[in-house]
Structures are given as C-alpha cells and as structure tokens.
Length: 234
Length: 294
Ligand SMILES: Nc1ncnc2c1ncn2[C@@H]1O[C@H](COP(=O)(O)OP(=O)(O)O)[C@@H](O)[C@H]1O
Ligand SMILES: [Mg+2]
Image (tube, chains in turn brown, blue):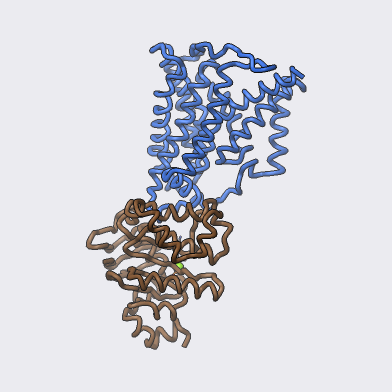
C-alpha cells in the first residue's frame, strides 16, 4: 500500500534521513522503533507531505506522491496523528472532530463517522462543546486520535500517542489503538512504549541516526538481542 | 440632556464608521498574521471606484458595491498570491511589512497619476440629509454604515463558525501545520481570507464614499484610527473591532464636545493607552500565539 524507496529528507540544508526504505501493506500494523532524535517524526512528516524528500520516491497505492502537497496526500487517504496532539485550541472538541472530516472522502459520511467515533471514545461525548484547550492531556490525545479517525483514512499514522501521559491514560490510549487495529485498519505507528507497540504490531523497522538498520516481524524483533538491549532495556 | 444624547448619537455614528473601515484589517491579521499596511489605500481604491461607477453610470453609490466588493476581493487575493505568498519563505518577516508599505506607496502614486491631487466628490444621493430619531438628529448615511457594520460582524462570525470553509479558515489561523494535516490547502485559505478581508474594505468604501470626499490621501486619513480600533479590540477579533470602534467613536465625540476639539485626539489616545496597559492583548484579544506564526 505504502512504499518508500530510498528517501533522503531533512530540514533546510540538514539531512536527517539517509536512504530510508520501508513498506506498509494493506491491514498491516507496522512500527518504527528508534531512539530520540533518530528521525521517526521526520519520516512520518515526510510521508504526510509536510517535508519533501531530496531523493527517493514515496508511492501510495502505486501512485507517486513524492512531490504531492500535504493536503492532496490527505485526500488520498493518509492521515497523521501528530506528535504533541496539535489540536485547534480555540475550537470546541466537536469543531476539531469536524475538521478531521474535512477531506472530501470523509465529508459526506461525517455524521456516520461521528457516531462510530463516539462509540470508541464515549468520554469525548460529554466534552463535545468544550474548547480543546480546556481538556486534560489525556483527553486531548483521545480527541487527536478521534480527529484522525474522522478522516476515514486508508492509512493511519500515529506519532508518539502516549508521550507525556500518566500510566493509566497510556493504558487507555493503547486500548483504543488496539480497537482500531482490531477493526482491520492499516497503521504505521511510532511509540516510545516499544514493548507494547511491538506486541500489537505485525512488523517493525529499527531506525538509527536516520537509517533503517533492522527490519523484521514484530515477534522476531521482540526476541532480537540488539532490540532488547537498546529499546526494551532487558 | 438632549445635547448629551446628541453627542452620544454622534459618537455611535462615528463608531460605526470606524468599525466598517477596521473589520477587514483585523480579519486579515487574525488569519494570515500579516499587517496590511496598504489597508487605507485599499479603502481609497474602493472609494475612487465607487466614485467612478456612481458618476459614470449614474448609479446609486450603494449599488456600486456589487462591483466594488468583488473588485477589492480580487485585489486582496492577488496581493496575497503575488506579493505576500512569495515572501512567506523569506527568512526575515520584516520583508512582508516592507512589501505592503511599498504597495501602499505605489497605490497612492497611481491614484495621483490617474486622479491628480483633486478631490472626487461622490454624489451623496440624499445620504447626507439628516433624519430625526427621537431626540437626536443623525445623517442617514451614517446610520446605514452603523447598521451595515453590525450586520457584517454577525455575518462574518456566522461564516467563520458555522460553515465548513469558515471553520477551515479558523483552523489555519489556530494551527497551520495541523490544518494541513486535515487536508486543508493552507495557501488557498490565505488567498481566500485576504480576498474576503479586502472585500469588506470594498463594502466600506461604497458606504463611506457618499459622505467623505475622496482623495489619494484619504486612506492615510482613516488608517491610523483603524489600527487603533483593531489593537484596542484585540488583534484579529472581529467583534472586538466593532466594540473597539464604538468606544473610540464615543470617546472622540464626548471628548470633542466636553473637553475641546483640540484635545480630542489626546483624550482618545490617552484612554487607548490606559486600556492597553491594563489589558495588553486588547479587549477581546486572546494572548497572541506566536508559535502559530511560522
Ligand atoms: N524543525 C526542525 N528543524 C531542524 N531540525 C530538526 C527539526 N525537527 C527535528 N530536527 C532534528 O531532526 C532529527 C530527528 O528528529 P525527529 O525526526 O523529531 O526524531 P524522533 O522523532 O525520532 O525523536 C533530530 O536531530 C532533530 O534535532
Ligand atoms: Mg518524534
């Protein structure tokens, strides 16, 4: 579904990613594991079209999206739930969710998707008319995920969904992601909680200093010595 | 008592005028975070256009709005597309300031070239006649300006809060990167917003032209007040601009009558400064989120 072929990308003159290749197939859950600053966010932002690769190609369902603008990529069905939530602070929760359904592929199913998302996030329902900025960190993260789902994406990308949240909330976030995965969604996820993420994933890539150094099934990565030492602390 | 009511009524009318010329400025700033220093000259262009349409075609000045507002929309959209947008990537944000200052100067010179230094009087079509409203007398045209300013505020708030495009505009203003992730074409929203803000100036032009003689410097005459109103109301707040305009209008009128017309401006700016010291973000201002201006 998503094929990344040897991309270099970065910020201005600084190259962060060096020849990164990876793929995500239909209904797969794929994770990118890596230390702080390895380039995980940069990878997701490049796929989303916020950054442009200087070399290499990105294909989505066979179509070359390397040079496509971010909003056109969303139209194709790729949605990124960004690091740090990035809600619209002075909009209500409801308005934030409606913005999630902005893309044409989702606009006509808005009410229907909203019902579905409310089932998944019953606690958001009571908060619909509150300003997003008035929510707790955990609630904001739930809204960010719900907003991503409102787009009815074909590929859903998560960037550190549990970052900075209390342990109980982290468990809730993983429960929700588990439900999304169980519904057959195609997911690319970056998460500091490597163990839980590999448990939920089908395959994984290990990114170090902007390069993929290892790729395998999640099961194999959980047993890999390097992964255990560097990322699981075992 | 009747004098007092008359002075207050004059202040309200002045407030309506200040509001109608300020709404476009605050809208553009609130969304694009660009101060349009050519704002006054947009008004000047709209007033000259109103003058031309009214005198050449013999139309009522208000009827000219169907041409002037779309024309100003295009002027605003083109300014964003061809002047501001290419500069967005410029390292130095001050480049944008110089760009709109330059545009302002260019427009004044263009107006001098076309219309000379003369004053263009748009036919008033009865709008300068006064009507009796209870104990006070006011100019008909001024009353319509106040009503239109109020309707414009309500209309824009409805558009921004209740329509998909309006919400997209607010989303871009609040978090540009997140808006992109929703599939919003941010550059297009900027062009649209500059166009809408300029179209508001177009509406103002056709309302103001029958009451004020138009000249190449008319923009400079109005624009300082517009900036004061916008800052007082809270940069980017449309209802704030309206309330700010009414306050400035009332102050202007009351100070002019009771303290003396030569001290009018001193009082207006004095109160303006006091309010800003007490509430630096303006009456309706949320704290400016500089992180979103990137
Ligand atoms: N906006 C930016 N401008 C310049 N460098 C950046 C920017 N964002 C991140 N970087 C740098 O890119 C590298 C990779 O960052 P990132 O992709 O955020 O890592 P990760 O998500 O794996 O923690 C880091 O060295 C970081 O300092
Ligand atoms: Mg990151």
